[in-house]
Each structure stands twice: as structure tokens, then as C-alpha cells.
Image (cartoon, rainbow, N blue to C red; front, side):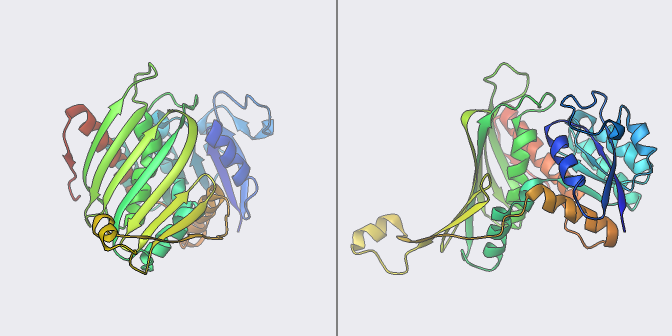
Length: 330
């Protein structure tokens, strides 16, 4: 079975989606809509359309939305009305209300609706999550993330919380196996833009796992780390390299009793795992394709995407109000 696929948006992520969609089994990329066309000239002109309506007219079965966040709701709703299964890049929408409208529309239409939270498909994060579920850390205590780097010129309509921290908020819920109970944050505006470019978030999940997240667009050094700490040690995932390392607590007690009283744990073995490293974007898209074809593919659902936007807005609300936000359970 071959599906006819369309892409909306030819920015940085759009170019990557076009490459993956054009080389995925059972997929024929039949059109790309972007009012600015293809400034690099690397896409076949016959595939480029200036409007979404022209793309929909190509009788597509599924679509990927990689246009600016502010346009997500309008584009997704038109695709839903046309009966087209859709994967929307994260964040799902500009705010929680818009995200919920999209999710409800796709559910009502009985269409596959997915969100591009790509970190769930990073081999290091996937291996970490499975190993935690298998009990390799024992009780999970804390999840910490650090996502820093220079400002990407592609972003105009949201700040660093909705563009980048949504990665961390979503993967934390996924790895930790629980929704956020409380969120607190501080933001800063250092680069002269209307949106925040730095955030420090702390939180606690409903299962009492403590979390913290440092995210900014102000560092010349690009880092992407997730650290999960539990009673038996810590996993460190470097998602830029898809590397996963385990730092174990020592099995034997330390030589001096006084040290153990102060530290609680002692340094044990360090293991860097040799794990398969398929491209996360391809894994994500293949899961979406499989969900459309036979309903068995792995996706991030739109209602999960709503939660990520909701948690991001709680962080922003916390920063504005200088208070801790307690999440409702809905």
C-alpha cells in the first residue's frame, strides 16, 4: 500500500521532513506547500505549491505540518476537514485552547493526529525509558534536562519555552511515567526579542519524581542532556549524539564510615551502552505511517501534545506571577 503524502512548510524542519518523506517505504511525496517556495532550489519545482488548498487538491492521504507555530491551528483544521491524517510539528499550537481544538477535531473525525515530539524517538531516551521501566535504577528520584544553544533564526512567533522546553516537558512526562503535579519557572529576556530566551523550570510529577530543566537560546555551546537519577544510580542521555551512559552506585560500602554518612552513595561502575542509532525523525515518521496504514504505529497523540502546551503555559504563568502553578488533573 502506497500513501500519497504532503508537506506544509519548507523551513529547517520542513527540509528534513521532505528528505525523510521522500525516502520512506510506502510513501510518495506528491506535494509541498509554502508561499515562499524553495529558496535553496533543492526541491523539484513540480512538487512546490504556493497554497495549502493546492496541496490538498493533490488527493493526499497524510500530511506533515512544519510551518510556523502561529499557523498550526488553521492548517491542521483545513487538513482535518479534508479527511487527511496529520502529524503537526511541536508545539501542537500557539496555546492550550487552540491545541485542544485541533486534538478534538481529529478525534471526532476519526483521523490519525500526531505531534512531532521527536525526543521520544531519540535512541538514548528510548533506551533510558525502557531501562528505567525494567528497574535498572530502582526507584526513580529525579529527571534533569539541559537544552542550551544559540538562537535559531527560524523562530519568530514563540519563545524558548514553547519552542524548546516543550521537548523537555514532554520527554519528562514520558520517561517519568506521570504527569506534572506542580511547575515553577523563572524566565529572562536578554536578546531584545518580545519572547523569553532563557528559562529555568522546576517541577514535581504526580508520582513525586522531582524535575528541573535549564533551557536557553543564549549559549554558544549547544548541549542536549537528560539525567535520570534513582536509588541505584544515574542515566545520562546525550541526545545530540544519541549516547546513553549509566553511572552506578557502588555495591561495596566506602572505606571510611564517615564518608558514607555524608554522601549517602559511593561511585560505582560507569557503562556507556552500545545501542542502535536510527534517525529519530525517520523513526517518528515511520510510526506515523504505520499508524495510518494498520493502526499499530507508535505516535505522540494530539492529546499528549495538548499536555505539553499546557505545561509550557504553566511555566510561563509561573514566571509572570512568581508563583508555583498546581496543575489540574484533567
